Image (cartoon, rainbow, N blue to C red; front, side, top):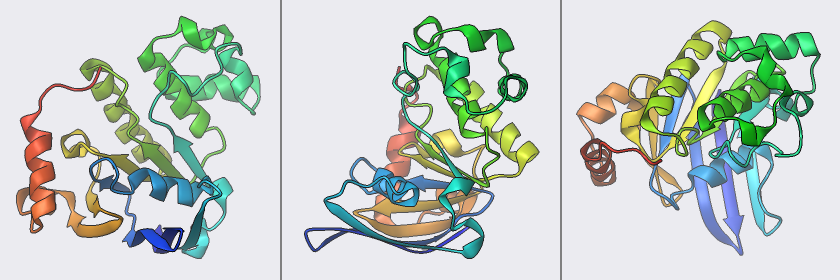
Length: 227
């Protein structure tokens, strides 16, 4: 997928102005406030009415129905009063297929969100994102709310799903270390501009930008993950 132009403005001030080639699996990395979440919202058409956006994608992915979104917090993504099965729009047979795809028993479809663990909820959120076979999967730090065990399991599962289903993945995160085994390219975002991009291995081992160097130092020096 190629983002030929993505421009976000507010009160005549430019918040994000980028162009980006998204490969098989691309990480969009930056600190809080760099414009990562705004970029995802613009792609999804979910920006606040106070902001204006101008988004040009290559024709193949121009329709929003071909994109799906995995939010940051699985604990707030599902209604606590609705059975898991009723969050889906597909048949019960397809629901069970999707649950198996993310490593869950179909019996959990009868449960309510508060009865499930964080890891189970995030797997269900990913299953929901995949129900209409999207060509592009947009992920907004989907392991932030999980412990390290569940985080690593979700990352491994995403890698396996991407290989099996062939969707393009844009993974937004502040933590470069978390995408080392998942993404093959990276774009570093600072104040709404891409300051460095390329092969993930090349950028990690030979960062050219001071901002990238600082992000790497912070990411690899911190071995504890958010709970």
